[in-house]
Amino acid sequence: MTISVRSVTVDDAEAIAAIYAHHVLRGTATYEIVPPTVAETTVKIETITDRSWPFLVACEGAEVVGYAYATQFRDRPAYAFACENSIYVAHDRRGSGIGKRLLTALLDAAETHGFRQMVAVIGGGEPASVALHGSCAFEHVGRLEGMGWKAGRWLDTVYMQIALGGGTASAPTADRPA
View 1 (tube, one colour):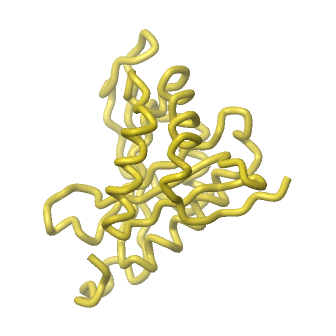
View 2 (cartoon, rainbow, N blue to C red; view 1 turned 60 degrees about the horizontal axis):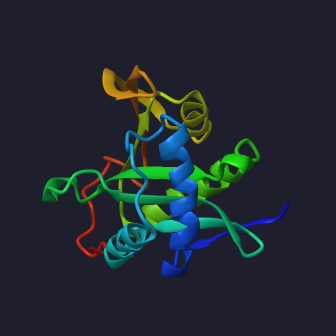
């Protein structure tokens, strides 16, 4: 299996919506209950890429088999240099290294953008996601207990974090892309 990673296009919306729908309907990594439509996914892609934030897809040939993106952690201006990641892999491709390829590429893209911190907000405290982020040097920084009710049980949310670029060693540069 040869996997390539590239920037997203709106033409990827259908595949991304399908990947995410599986996780919404059958998993606990997201607290959404109803999968977004292809149209809503297209808007999400456009919103993220219009801000020049990184949004990547992993492909096997022409087939999208996973995706990852980074968005500003919160919308207040002081958070402009902190991002939150999201990463999802097609259910039948999990455990094959696609997630690590995506996350590694996303870390590089987020650093290039000028983000100095990345936070993973891991719904359900999913062990595979915790392990993936740990393998990329994220550190466990918190756990919120019982934050979501899904699949007939209370779910914890795990926070993991990694410094990008200079981290907090210096002030951000003024010429960072908006």
